[in-house]
Image (tube, rainbow, N blue to C red; front, side, top):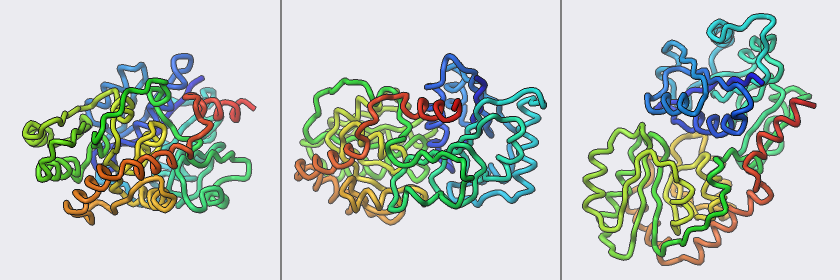
Length: 360
């Protein structure tokens, strides 16, 4: 099959969209042809995509994308039509060449883009978590948990569209399903705020650990290749005992299964923590992370400190100290989160479900 992903990622909008598409794409390989269509991505990420055997088509930069954030508005109909024409031309599509599955993971695109792409696609799958615009698609995938998660797309997709909703459909890398259970280290913290961490919360947590000066706490700190403050962070990590820095590591699941608590963002990391059985202390980095995180907090499936920019270092320190002195409470939070993913032990579950729908 010919499968195309239309997705963007940058330090401003984050890399989560690209990473979850990469995870899903890997499930379709090597028996299918995979192409990513994107605006310019960070160089390291471009090289990684190409190294795993995925064709990467880079579209020219555009102001509406260059300055996009996770809260950028949906493009108007005309801009979406023009962008669809650009994609059709760039992909070299003709009336007799059809994409078997087009995946769209993009907050600025909606039904007008899909409608233009229809004549060149057998099936369209939209990956979303905002439920703020109409989609013309055959499958709608939203892995997040909300109070109304089962009904929020009812008026936004066609009647024939199959909706795959909730954590049961979390897109997780195969490493998270491996039955390896390394020994959890007492009072060991994992810190990660995604691939770019534009607010540099990672360094703030390092500052809190420096202020605590506790010989009883150890930590792993993870940053992505797009993180821009590595050298300064390294200096602070070097001043900390029992703390190790990992840059663009490929063993996140092992680090999660080793730690007793994780400090990080919302988004896909909620489900990575859940399947690894680790409680999360969460600071949300974008508006689209808030509702799911609030819902999980109210269900005692994570500890939400608040939004980026509203959490003080003192609150961070108190949260770390609470996690260390309350291991049983943190264990209960981790177990509550893990229960949301029960029944999804198969790493290809999402791919298998999509294939069953489109081949029907």
